[in-house]
Image (cartoon, rainbow, N blue to C red):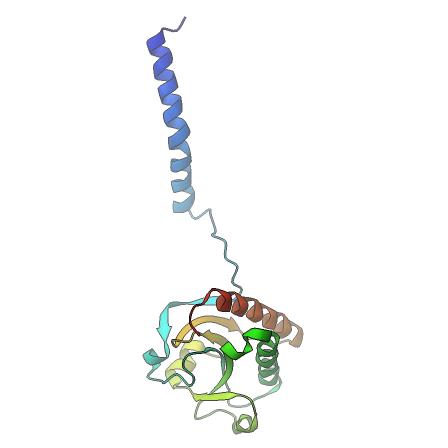
Amino acid sequence: MDSPQRKGRRQLILILLVFAVPVIAAKIILELNFYQGGSTNQGKLITPETHYQSFAMTNPQQGVWQLFYIVPQHCNQQCQTNLYVIKQSHTALGPYQSRVKPTLLLTQSSDPAVNDLEQWLFGYASNDLVEFVGQQIVIVDPLGQLVMRYQLEPEHQQAILQGKAILSDLRKLLKLSRVG
C-alpha cells in the first residue's frame, strides 16, 4: 500500500505535469515551425513598413486609401485587364467608394495612351518604387504607407478572382480603419 506521503507526491507531480506539458508542447511546436498562423488576408503584406516618402515621392492623394498600379511601357491586354480589375473592385466597394481612389502611377517610360483615361487619379512613380513594387497592384493607406500587394495574374479569369481578393481585403481594411 502507498503511504499518504507517496500518494501526495504523486498528485503534486501529476498537477505539475497537467500545467507544464501544454506549455512545453506549445514551445516546441512554435520553435520547430509546425504551427502556421492563420491569416485572412489574400494579398501579401508589405514588410518592413514602407512609405511613399522612402521613395522620395509625394502621395498623389492624401487622406484616402489608394489602389495603385504602375503603368508599364506598353499597356497590352494584361495591363488593360488589370485596369479593369482595379476599376471593378473600386465600383464594387459600394458605400466605401469615396474612401478609396484608384491611382495610376506613371513613370517616364509609361504608355502615354493611358493619359486619356478618365476618372483615374494620376501620380508619378520613381524608378526605385518601380523596382520595389514591380508590376503589381498595391493598397496604400491614407498616411502613404504601402500595405498590401497583389501579384498580377496573366489570365483574365485569374485576374477576376484576384479582384475579389482585393475587394475582400479592402473591405476588411476599411472596416477596421479609423483613418481615411
